[in-house]
Each structure stands twice: as structure tokens, then as C-alpha cells.
Length: 181
Figure 1 (cartoon, rainbow, N blue to C red):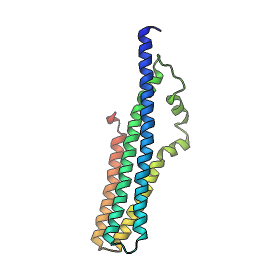
Figure 2 (tube, rainbow, N blue to C red; figure 1 turned 60 degrees about the vertical axis):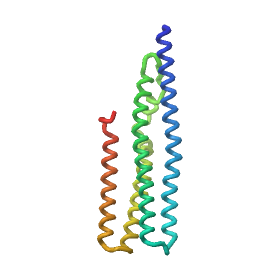
Figure 3 (tube, rainbow, N blue to C red; figure 1 turned 120 degrees about the vertical axis):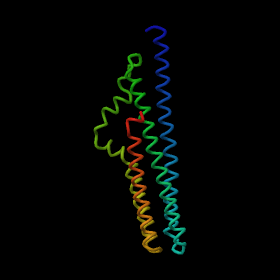
Figure 4 (cartoon, rainbow, N blue to C red; figure 1 turned 90 degrees about the vertical axis):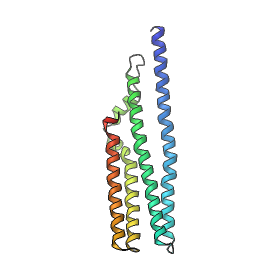
């Protein structure tokens, strides 16, 4: 191997390390922020449910804040996942570069597990958590509004819930689109 090839190889390996570190750091930050947002939403809902004398408007506001926390967490999850996919794509290119010759890197591991049922389930875990919390919080909001306000307020909450579901689907479709690559 010539000097130019050694320099190029060193640059590729440094890029590989930086990309891996970026993914690892984002994962760590993601876990921290998600813990705060999800815990905050659960704390808010617990407070609303434990205080029977709380004004129903405040109750509804607390559920809306909890839903907002979950939606923010969900959007962060979707964008972090999308960014990680882009970085892993570059990592796979580096692993396959003839100068690097990394037969047992991320690419090999992913190829070995990508069709496993447990891996597919693992990839959807956060989506399951977010959907579950969102459905529960929206249900509690609807229940709270239905016992306090007239039917028009309940209809508005239902329309907002439907709009939020549609927004999620639109964002999910946009982020999974190959046009963003």
C-alpha cells in the first residue's frame, strides 16, 4: 500500500470512528431526553388524576401538555432514527471500501439480524410506547372533557386527536421517504 492509500485509509477510519461516536452520543442523549419527556408526561397525568378537586379546564390542559410531551418525544425519535440510518449508510460504505476491508462491522451484524422477529419488534418498541401513551392520554382527555363540557367540546377534542394521528402518519411517511436521502 502506498502513502496516499495509507492516508486515505486513515481518513476513512477516522470518519468511521466519528460516525460511530455521533450515533452513540445521539443515542445517549435521546435516552436522556426521552426519559425526561415521558416521565414528565406521566407525572403530569398522575397529578391530574390524583387531584379530584382540580378545575376541569386545568385537568384538560394537563392532558394536552402530556400529549405534547409525547409528540415531541416521538418526533425526536423519528428524526434521530432517520439521521442514524443516513450515518449507518455511510458507515456501511466505509466498511466495504477496499482500503478498509472490514468484513465484521455494523453491516455484517445488521445483515445477520435484520430478518429476526425480535429485532423487528425491538425496532418498533418506541412506536408502541408512544402510540400507547398517546391513545391513553387522548382517551383521558376525551373522558375529562365529556364529563365536564358539552358535546361540541368533545367533538373538537376528537377532531384534534384525528388530526394529530394524521400528522403523525404524514411525518412518518415524509421521514421514511427516500427523497430525503
